[in-house]
Image 1: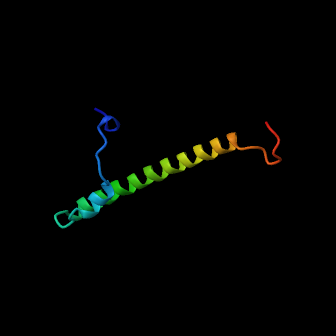
Image 2: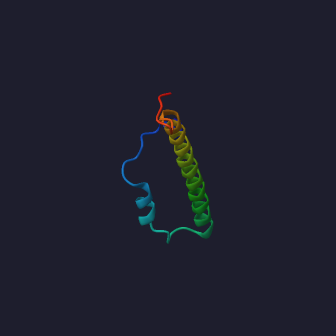
Image 3: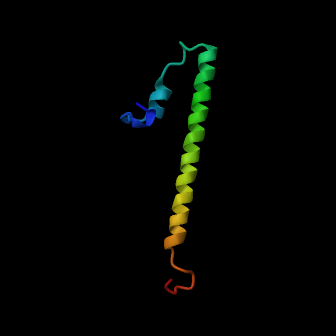
Length: 71
């Protein structure tokens, strides 16, 4: 099963991560955690930017012309 096909967990994952104890993790494990979190941040930012561009394109398509005349 691909990661995208799994059921989406409920709750706020960022809050769950923030409440996890980091004490048992080694420096290597902390470095890997940081690397994975940075990748997730980049993925989230890219998705946000694509959604914003999609919204801007839709707004431009359906926006009335500035002079008020019909298209």
